[in-house]
Amino acid sequence: MSTALGLKLRLGDITEEMADVIVNAANPGLLGGGGVDGAIHRAGGPEILAECRQRKKELPGGQLPRGQAVATTAGRLWARWVIHTAGPIWSAAEDRSAVLASCYTESLRLANDLGATSIAFPAISAGVYGWPLEDAARIAISSVRSVPRGSVAEVRFVLFGSAAYETFRSAL
Ligand code: AR6
Image (cartoon, rainbow, N blue to C red; front, side):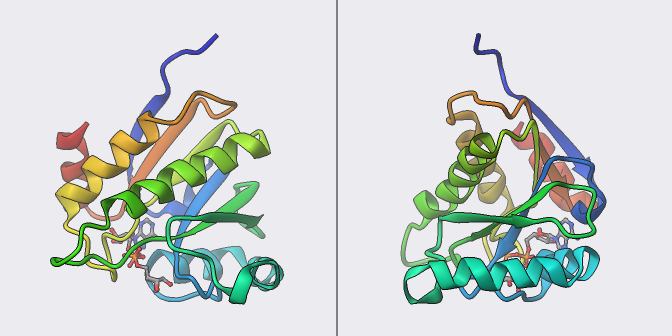
C-alpha cells in the first residue's frame, strides 16, 4: 500500500547522517570537489573515489550527465551507499529547473532500486553552483514528492547552516 513519504529536515553535516543513502552534490567528472562533495570524500575515505573511477569508466565520455545519478559504496560513512548526482549550474538566462528536479527524482529512484529505506539530500546546486536557496528548496521538496513510493520511507534534507534550514522549513 502506498503511504505518504516522510519528509524531515535536519540542520548539520550530512556526512554524520544515519541514513541508508547519502546523496552527494557532485560534478560530471565524479572525482571529487569542494563543498559537500569534498566533505563526503574526506569523511568516507578512498573507497568512494575508487568506485567513482569505476562508475566513470561505465559512462559515455567518462561524464555523468547533469540530472542523472550513480551509486557507490559509502566507505567509512554510516550510510550503505552514496548516490552521486551532478546538479545544474544556476543561470539567469536559462531555466534549468527540470535538471535540478531530475537530480532528486533520479537519486530517489536509484535508492528505491537499491532497496534503501532512508535517504539524505543536501541542497543540490545551492552552493558553488549558485542556485537561489528559496527556489532550490521549492524544487527539492516538490520533486521528491512526485516520485512513486518505493522502499524509501523517509527522505531527509540535511541543511548546512540555519539560513538554509529556515528556507527549507518555510518551503515545507
Ligand atoms: N553537509 C550538508 N550540506 C553541506 C555540507 C555538508 N557537510 N557542506 C556543504 N553543504 P555545494 P553545489 C551545503 O557547493 O552547489 C563541488 O565542488 C552547502 O552549504 O557543495 O551542487 C562539486 O564537486 C550548500 O547549501 O554543491 C561541484 O563541482 C549545498 O550543500 C560543485 O561543488 C550544496 O553546495 C557542486 O555545487
